[in-house]
Length: 66
Ligand SMILES: [Zn+2]
Image (tube, rainbow, N blue to C red):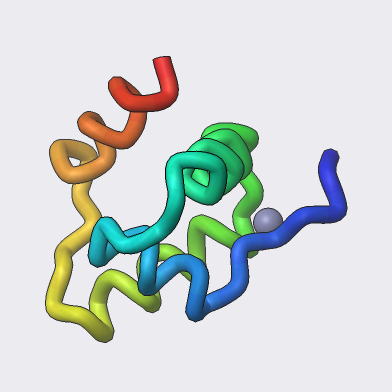
């Protein structure tokens, strides 16, 4: 497992669509690696911004990564 972890501020930029393509790729790859710590971070960041992370909401993320 990589030592890279998604920081809260990175995650918030990612959710707002403000992160670079490179950042997006790293974040998505990491989440797809099923890092529980960062999946928790994305849920927290999403709920703070009024997003609801559901199976449906995650589907586009999986498509981008594919
Ligand atoms: Zn992580």
